[in-house]
Length: 392
Image 1 (tube, helix red, strand yellow):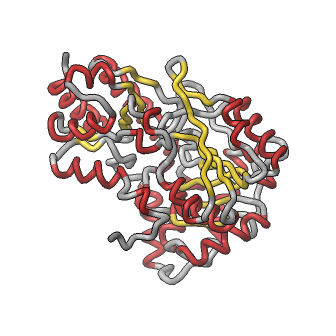
Image 2: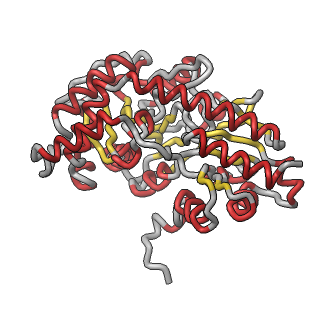
Image 3: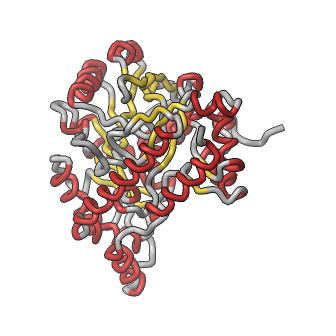
């Protein structure tokens, strides 16, 4: 008999752990888990190392070191056109994942409903379950080589029980960047039903082909009902630092902090010092990293298309969603899980089966997700292996 609490039983082990284990077992190129295989800027590492030498080694304040919260206020003003008070409206968390959990636990009550777009980052459903809330789902669907959602579908899931909607743009895994029209539609529903918006913006600086990120907090009437959540990891290729944040008005920040103090209480001080240095002084690195991803995205997309995948070019983030039917049919396989289990052993490449990110797995079973946040040498190696194993 399982001893795991019932709220976690449906989620099992994360697909990232499962696929990375398969990649390691077969010495496969790991295009599954979304972490870079290169380091972030030296400036941040030097600042973190200096902080250790300077004795910044005890508990940081619950809300985060003032130097980082002040840097985040400048970042928010410059990039999201949103001013915020670093003392009362910014909370430093252990990555964006903790910001999501703290927001759910601190602001959502048992029995409330929370709207999620599917496919979703896998921690979303677990965070809703931890809060004792009920998830409601709206499917992001393929359309004309991209992804979108139906306005009527979204309108239909709002009710008098809805407490919050979790918005993720740029979106993982589809790469969709929400348009102003989509954000305004969501905002109007939030205002009409008195609903909070939890906005996961971890890929905020990673967009392509002229697409741009806008925070829903900047839509008229949304500042007071939005929690903006992001992190250092994706923008500066430092996912292991786990430095994230939640930006919200004081009354919402109070709820987030109420949960945060009993989850992690604080984030390591040296990492916060390194993060502050990067946010203020390494912004030129963002363009360099973005340009690199533009190139790896293009090279991998072209190669996958040549092998028979139908590629949906992402507008943002660093994942490619590709329909695999033609490829799987040649191999005698059917679902995304079949193919992603086959690839590490037979092709030496690991990818993610995105059906695990859906309440209704059949909506994602026709796709495979490949991460392109890697060195070009890594992408080239993966392509050579895929071509050897999959070339028609």
